[in-house]
Length: 194
Image (cartoon, rainbow, N blue to C red; front, side, top):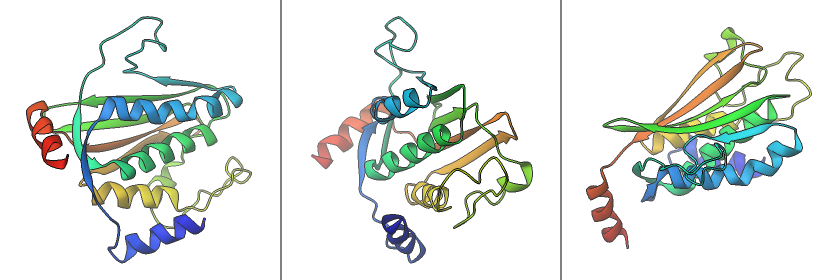
């Protein structure tokens, strides 16, 4: 809570740091997903990573796509961790699926769950500071109402955005979208950053 409050204070007065580094988003997000495997298993949930290059989730080895971005790696880790942690927290049974997709300009990291979902009237307020959904499904689940606010602010600092789609009692999908850079530009920037 103390760290969250410090981060919120920095976000509110424009002091959030931003140190971009080239990152292979698929590999990076895969390492974050690994950090949550045990937590999901302990709750009896399946945690899937779609572009898993090891093939562990699909039973066969696959070639994972490569999407590069030039973003603050700490911010990216914090956002993806928060989204996965929330998905696990608000899902009583079923699965959490993390995916990374890209197009010509953007890379999107999505976290989909089969959890309790979000009532339509609450979606607009989700990313506000200290906002918590208050109903019988959420009362026993702890939280400060700061996580999604921080995620939104960190995404904005990186030049990205977070979107959500949800259906009450049927789960949610949170998607972080950031700018993609081409392989050649990524190699050039990596050399400069080194």
